[in-house]
Image 1 (cartoon, rainbow, N blue to C red):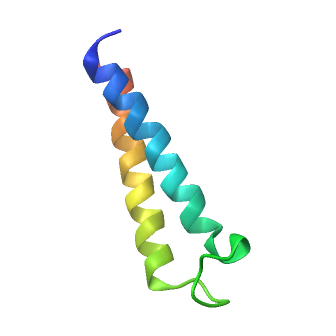
Image 2: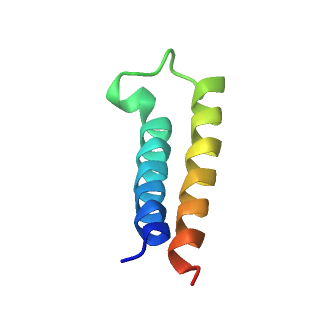
Length: 61
C-alpha cells in the first residue's frame, strides 16, 4: 500500500474519532456543560475536515 493511502486511512480514522468525541462529549462526561459549546463545535468541524481529507487521500490514485 502506498504512503498516501496509509496516511489517508490514519487521517480518516483520527478525524472520525475526534468527531465522535466532540459530538458525545456531554454524554461521556468531558463536556463543560449541558449545552453544545464552542469547543464541541470546533471539534466537530475539525474532525469532519480531517476525515474528509483522509477520505480523499484514500481515493486519490
